Length: 292
Image (cartoon, rainbow, N blue to C red; front, side, top):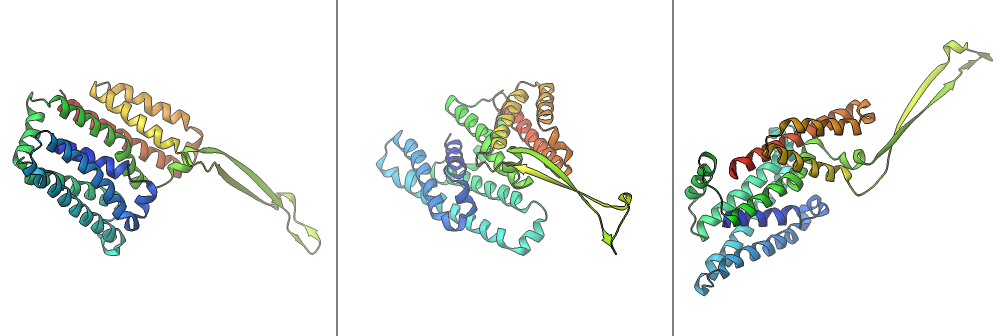
């Protein structure tokens, strides 16, 4: 349960207490970000320590794990910042650099949390993996507390966490696209005059200009739609109602029908939708396997 608790604390501090502005200026706000993690870790470690209230264990179960996790969190974040600025790293990782760094960053943080559970809470790493295998292959189930934490983690993964990942894969267009208002066009009809003679009408130059109008609204409705969409897909997958997922895709396509005329936006829409559906389905399958 301590592993799930630490992961929950990490996700809350990383994706809910950290604002978008802080994420964009991570190098300047890293200390403030670490303070958020300190608060979440303090709550988790104190809860587990208070179950026994052993004064001799306060260093090993509260202070040391917090310092250990915060130190490596700082190292991992600094490394990510430097790698994101490195031209060589971007060349080696190829496309979707930010998305790949995002995944590596989160995997590294989770690994540190598992290691800290082993070092300070006497939970062998082999036991953690054996427990995971038993949950997948046998009828072993989680306890009530662990089940609640697991569901909370799944919800966070299906909403904010996956939202950040998708945004790093497909770019920063959702703000504009989700608040799309419409399009207008106009034509210019010019006559070239040379030596006081007008060129016949058939030879006149005709130009057409198309402009897309957006409403600059800070509230991103597309993001909220994505959260709800993945949660619905997760629930439908859990109950094996795969056919119903098709109706969600159809509903989104109908709502955005006019925008589909623009190829660049259509590709963006399809990539985002397919990726969102894939994440929702995978999380739904994982939930069904663990909570069978």
